[in-house]
Image (cartoon, rainbow, N blue to C red):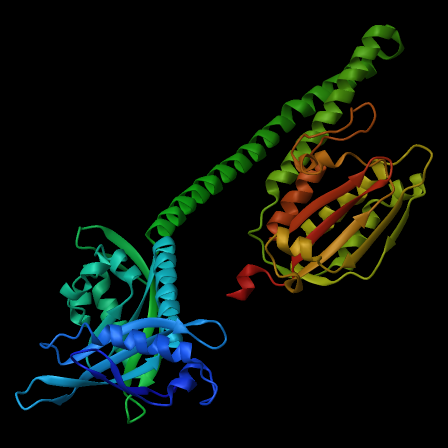
Length: 495
């Protein structure tokens, strides 16, 4: 602590009668180096203060500024009291002590600034902090907590903040549980996070609060809790949004289930009339044989061809509607899934002289049949959309999750597998990278490439069922890479 400067002044004239040598230390000088100007500045300040002496005061306090040796301005605080009186009891001399309060002032300013910033942050984020002095049964609130309860922080002195008074604001339906929770907390000292309860403010507004608390001090016996600190946030708006989202998700799930059921029933019911069209068309063609004219034969062939495309479309719709995630997740070796897909595509691979390279893939939790269908559709896509006169080259491998992927999908890359399938096909413009997973979306005419426009929609559905992600990255005439990201552990297994 910096030394005090002692000084004595005349009450009548205000002149300085005595000044201790410690003034040099406060002003930054050696005793023999102190400048007369500095001494004079200090003396003038003290004398000016002393000349304002009022006889009805016992202690006098004054703050003023003078220059330090380093050029900075420092704050000096002086306290004085009557040191000597005359025979009539009138004050004659004042004894004063002065000190450098520059650092103290900075600390107080910083403290006020921090308090102000904290108060502003609490107001913006709807939270407050508190300290519970358990043995005294007293609670100290921050400004934010007063605002949450509908009070003006400026009127805090008028509020009684004993714990029982807090309970009167708690929602009746939540009070018993809160009392029980606090009883357990005081008995065990176990920290609790995200404790939720409701209150009713003085204005009758119901709010949902979320609190965290921690023991910060015990009594002398080391067992009795003496002080608890915590924070409380107003989660009313978030709970409202959460409820609205839950309702929307519930409605969306119901709508999706209805759509899936409709797609299944409609597709199933379309099978029978379609079967009759094909059957009677083939019988008509067989019965007429060579006697049919050229144009009717062309019309009949087109009809049968359209019926076959419709059959494929219906079968794909049925496949899509049957894809659900209500099946049991089991250990699946993705190498086996690829092997099954390659077996299904064996003829197409031979006919196009495709080269398929598969690096070692991981084991994951999933639905084996759906994962095989996923790779089957992607392989079919890679072989179908090849450049004319160019043999397909397809590479399937496992890679690490990139930082950008983890950021985009808000995941921890260490908890996910990534599998990529790259081809050297015709590619497409990346502006369609998301649209290609939409049902019936085709980038090319049926005359160029056969298909129903459902294959990649099935891929997206399979990956969604596995709580993963799939996306494509492509360049025209340079090929396409499909990236599949799957969790190592399914959500139900984490519980």
